[in-house]
Length: 294
Ligand code: C5P
Image 1 (cartoon, rainbow, N blue to C red):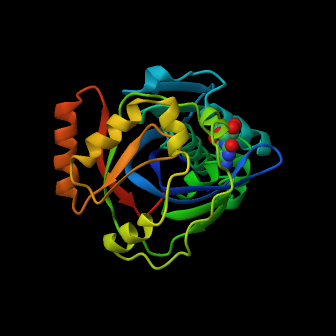
Image 2 (tube, rainbow, N blue to C red):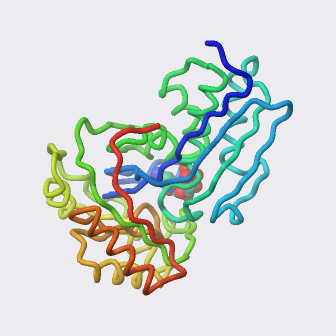
């Protein structure tokens, strides 16, 4: 593949939303077995990659200040892990991360950035690798990275690495809200008092918003009570979302971001306007679930 030397590849790293998250067991290494229905939002961070004389990494955006720009950043870990597998192809690269998602907030920020970096770099370096190879590399860095590579509605099992994309899924109008609390995922998992819950109910065709909401009524986020005990602000977030007449309100991942599902984009926008009025310091975004990944 011929590459123009000054080509910039820019991808959205969408927010990951666990519509349902069941904790079904624990592996001998301490990682938890999950069964999760996941969608990705039409909103996220932005990753740009470009060839350069020397490696470079810059972070900007409203939540950029909350992140390290050194080798501990998952984006650089992803770059280095991919480079280790393809050392002959991995020329120096300038990476720019525009951070729009709050950090450590249950919507996959670090994982979705790492996944987008793997996808963008494999394209820039013309690696000609499939998603399975990238997923195996990503899994070494974080359990949620493989699913983020798909960027489409899916079921994730195992510790998150067994992925079943959904063939059809409706576009869900969504509102994301976070009161500003950042949560330690290991702390939440450690605080669980029950780890052997039933799996998600058998999957059925989900063609409409009603199908999804009916299905979700029989599901949970099993991390919710543990997060709630660690983060008092969660109750306020859930209550504020409930007051905007959504079809369903729930927390994503280990929190603290919660989401509402609405009948229409307009309802989600109006709910966002109300939440912003009442809580000007919260992260509030009206968006929707997207069918296509990067
Ligand atoms: O894999 P990742 O670094 O994103 O996970 C952060 C932490 O969350 C892990 O160190 C582990 O404590 C916990 N975790 C878990 N089971 C999972 C995913 C994460 O216990 N399936």
